[in-house]
Image (cartoon, rainbow, N blue to C red; front, side, top):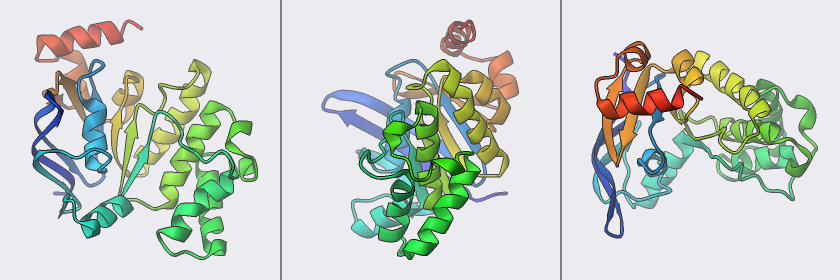
Length: 246
């Protein structure tokens, strides 16, 4: 059985008095693709933000690669080197070229030489099908191209796990498929992925496990074939009927 890449046990989080995550238990095996869906405000993004320590959980345990997340600087460094994150907004440095955006992390955090970092960056730009954009600045690119640069930037750190927080929600409809196609390829290559998304066609295609969240709780968890055809909970049925109509 594959080892667990990510484990959340009894995880709770509050924003002041608002209880945003309630006893979250989730295991993501190495190589597994997990898709988290649910209505707005259900806590989906907070789960992935807690996994890579952009948010602190107040109760429970999160382990990445067997290392428990704590406030200890060593733990933070260990986790951040293993976990890549792709956001709704691309978060690229506008004053740097695409190549400079991609080489910054490997040079500073991984200690790569500029030559090796650029070689790696070009490899991953090729991987996301935009090798010819290396010397442009982000604002010269379309939204779909910028998001693919953001994915390549995460891959340049060669993480063990990739987290995606609604990576297509800021894109125009015609650009969504070019980003999803790259994500499908990564999934097929065996990358461990946790994806928060409303793109149910993508979820059906790549997910090993579907998670439905509502009001800070995991309401339903299951394989896509059962999740989409025979959801157990009324809340999940209602959500799917609304989202699959669009």
